[in-house]
Length: 441
Image 1: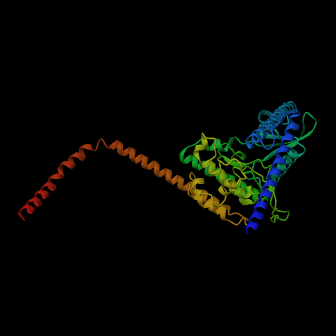
Image 2: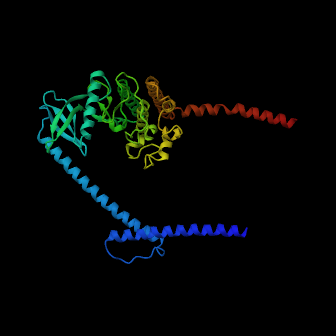
């Protein structure tokens, strides 16, 4: 037994020695790298005497130097991109009008991927938005060509679709004589947030529900023609206002759209690995996991947008009213859990009408391979409008009755006093009689 104990002890001793030797070798290599990085012969502490805290400080210093270099490179790249965007904007303003009919009124945005102008038609005086995509190794132009194809196809098949219309398209040249594709789109007068925040109380809820129905119809039109939006968010919706007509909500920015049907109208085979497309804050949990998106993913994104619009705190606050707003990394298990069926609905739907609980459960539990029931969702939104209107009318009637009661209170004080003065005599006699009966007994 003693020999066995000695042998096991000697084996452990040898393994610990080998581990220590390996650690010493790693530390020596680390010292050599540090000396080579600095390029100077400096005296270093031996690997055995060097503490872990010292090594950690040196490694943090090296990472800080690397991060500073990266930040400087990024700043230089941003400044170069801003300079190129400004040069492109100035060049495009110099060569206007586009297609000899579109004159630039103002610049909406100018960035890495191109420039957007607010333009006016020369003869028809029609307002539009022109998007010019920069040539970035073909990627931006391909996205612009695809978006123009989708919009043109939607316009030919569904002229009344709640999708922004394409009015014109063509080719331009930038300052470097490279080809640029542009397209003129229907102009949206008001953003969705401005339209909703322009009202209060029941009118605000009604506007949110109208935006919900308009955007839901836009998704239905896209899905009916074989396309998925894949980037639902408030910034990709707009309101078109025309005289003597109610504002109409339309969808735009279809650069991430994808066909989910083949040439015969059948569903395409889902991919096993697909990159994420969309904005993480409003994307569905299914798409964040890297799975193939379906029509239900568009509807889940639409639902998250409506949850945000129902929250009145978004008027003055920049944070989103979602339980996952605190999550910085959108691919963490916390994000996946909060966007699953196990997410606490009382936190997500605390500002929404009760009918949105039914919509939420339907979208989370439905079979993703089947076609969504758009009528069921639209009827629930319509019911939310009717019940909210009835509730607001009831509140107004109660307030009016309370105000009328306060106004009539001063006139009825004398009559109430006379009635009270007449009543207590009868009660007092009955009490005296009962007292006499009790004493006689």
